Length: 216
Image (cartoon, rainbow, N blue to C red):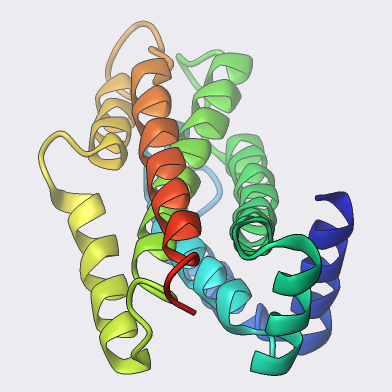
């Protein structure tokens, strides 16, 4: 698996396809977050953008190989393992960006009345929730489950939107908690939302990897 992850990471970096989602996310955060804002509210804004960015990055990783190369890798390592490596690569890349963003927003935000360590921890966990949920969306909205590029993009956008606004979604629960905690005397870490997001990401990834057995 290590070799597959290194291979997928090298493909992603060389292709430069990661520039579009990451630059758009940088613009999103740069426009919406200002130094001196209440830190938890700023974190709530910043992490929401990680959902579509992760779904986009996972989609890129799952479609960046030429068909011939994909066939060779699948023959050597197995379709499911190759598919899993692509999903993990896209997810890990955005997770690193999200962690850096959460720490950066915590550093420049107004932390009056909020413990810096608690705010940073909540921001990191919120970023993880959004990344895992975005990974689930990305795994379910592209090859092999939805091979059509047009339908794949449409369902990716719709899935990301639903993850942000649907009642009970781990993302909505986490972001709502961040905004609420901005006016509360103590910070509540979103462990339950993280567990739900992890289950969703695991189930979506397992389904997508299993689907590679009969669809390419």
